[in-house]
Image (cartoon, rainbow, N blue to C red):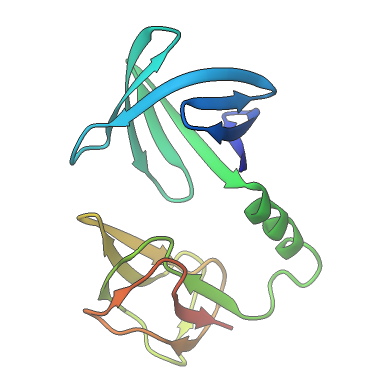
Length: 165
């Protein structure tokens, strides 16, 4: 699968071809990447050189630390990027917005109720996954149309948790 990765003003096309081999902007690189158990730390070996990499997920980006350098990295797969482009077209501020679980987890809190008006950036749901609490924010102004989960409920990846109209 191809990913469009943005670091600062630079974009990179990253394709994961097979285990241990990736392509970055049509350049093949052999990489050995292993996550250290129960941490956000990875060990990465490229061309026999070892690098310690720490990654954590932010709000719409990943924070990647390599050595003393910290980068904010936005990663989109081709399909997500295409759909986002379509959503930005005419009428993008209308219609139903689905808030889906990006990973399996447990619903911790739903600080909104059906029919409540929300504004862009308001927290509408908190999901715990991998011992981390993730806040889901309204992507635009609207009204809570449906709440399809409840606190304490386990959800699978891509489960629609609530909708905003």
